[in-house]
Image 1: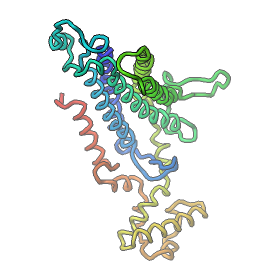
Image 2: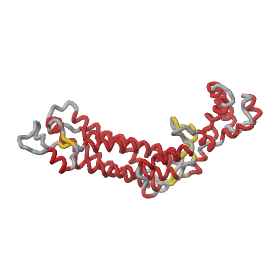
Image 3: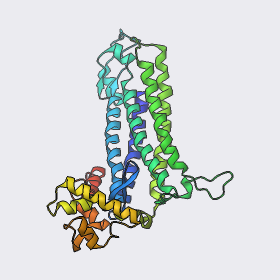
Image 4: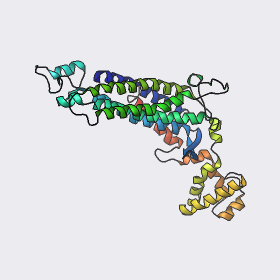
Length: 344
């Protein structure tokens, strides 16, 4: 099982790296493509599509580390533990380990027979990866809806309806979303088998294959779907930009007032009053005459309109890790270095 799982993890690590490369490639195409960032599933502030895609790159980078740890856990040789207490034969465990590609020996025969930590490490990594891919799938399901309209899914990763000919269902994203509870259940299943189990061997332990092999099958199917979907998906940049209405620059307006000496608490309150006034009139934050705005505060001036430019708002998020294009290009460079340390 350890030998098999080691090969599985190596294969799936390659698939993870391939998926990361797709994310870097697509993010590089959209460094300055604006769209709303959401909090509470409400439009919040302006970000870039590249920043959004790279968020998943860094999630997957941590998954790579977890799978690499799980692979390392498979490199302990249990042979020689016998049924529970070791064997009576002069077995050269070090020679066997070298022959089979193991890096070290298990230290205790009872634990070697009863332990399944290496399988738990894999299942935990798989469950975390499942959550990450589920979140990506869930967002793509939302973005493909008419209410969002941010993406058009490729035919190969969409489904139709048995009775509604107009339907274009986000099947691939939904299956990505559904993988998370399946993988979490596999982890919980093996934890349940092991908890309270006395040393050393018990027939319960053969159930490890049920959960382990199911998780392997799930990820072997899931990773190529996520890869193909991201390669072929079409992003509607105009629709994304249209969703970045001026209300998303409300925080920038507050910052504009702070730059003119107003405490942020007061600026926040004043901007809220401005938002309410504009909403009551059915206009954006750029819809009130300057004279009326100056009645709210004399801090508003002719340069106020610059605070409402969504691309300028993006550029102002210039701290490390922020959405500004120059910061995103730095992220892309670091991500590319992780994928290709030698620069080949």
